[in-house]
Length: 591
Image 1 (spheres, helix red, strand yellow):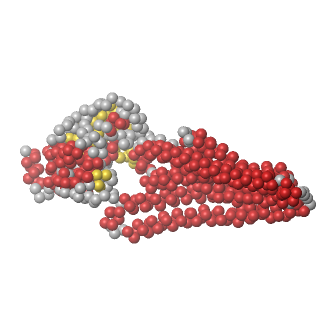
Image 2 (cartoon, one colour; image 1 turned 120 degrees about the horizontal axis):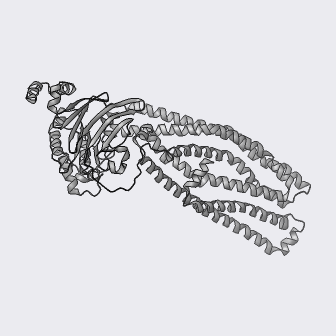
């Protein structure tokens, strides 16, 4: 019942239309008994009745009326069927449109942990195939159920008005059919749940392979990826066949029972006809409506098959529909204000699942200060910066921006004051100008070019086929890693935020380009607190302070010269990167 309540809830705005469609289904299906009744009248009055010849001579007007009535009701049923189908389609499509928008917004509002737990391919399957299965159920399966049930009941009631005993003989096969259908439904439902899961795995493999195609080709792993895809495809195919074969196990029984209705009619109906219990017209009515009893019984397996698919798909959609993020963006309207850019970490602890990533981390960044963060891989650098815009919440301690705990700030306001260029660069399938202006759609072309110049991107952009109008992205023109990093940096600079976070954004550029970028960052025209994650000493040397992380703890802190004097981790990195001239620079720095 939960599923039906959920559907009814999401039919808001289309409920009246759907109810009209259901009513039209009942009316149109009920009219199926009209033509058999009229044919019964024709047979008994003009063909096989006691006074058939006389009536044919004297009641021709009635015969014409009955024939025209059959034609008229056939046309009426056709028109109703068309109108009914349109109402089902419009209401189901409108419902799916609304649900798809809601689900998309829901996914957009989830926190980072949700994306860590859910695969992209799985989410895509839910937003496409599963949603379409629900729409198909609303437009066709429920329609088929209502119409089959109405036709069956209308036929049975009509049969009862003709002869109760013959009707009971006709219905003797109904109980075993329902038993077979119940057993089939109970067996097949878990199979369709497994089938949807295997489809999600197949889509995930496909999505990962396409998005990571460059890596696949770089390592010549095409055969491995083909084998992996083939395995998932085989698993899905086997599950699909298994579910289909279950239906085929029960199909002969249901089909045999459905065909047996004709046998019972021939035997019992023929016996009653020979003994004068029913007329030829009534027998003809039974014959013309026998499909109204046998077809619903024959279709019951197909209906159950599709219903199980529907429940399996709906359960996947409901997972998204009722997902609740731990970090909620309320989108409350607040007075727009620009932060000063003061950031404090007070005894911060952060865990990812059960693993401690940051432990008792404390430091303060003053407004306008440039802070560089260094540390070995896995030391917690990226986790640290993800706590500032509150992509994740701390497990202990506090992260404060302008003296307020980030958990007390409206997310729109907090993130609206932070510009980020992440380590994993993503460019949208848009023009270069559109990518740079992504955070500020009002950005003029001249401003976009200016920020591209600050990021050392302007020179290579103007050499591209269409300059700033060149389309980039997964299916656009290829860009090098350094070019992508510079466009991402221009995008972060263009929003002119008081806090700028750069996660290793110059790792793929040459030293000359890096020097240009560092100079641009020092000479920004707007006040800005800068947090830069880097592994190059050439990047960190000009920072006001350098923080060194190890195992989630702050082990060193100071300026370039101070850290060199300590001869710790920073000194070792400096020596490795400047082994030839390290001693000379060290001595000059100490002076």
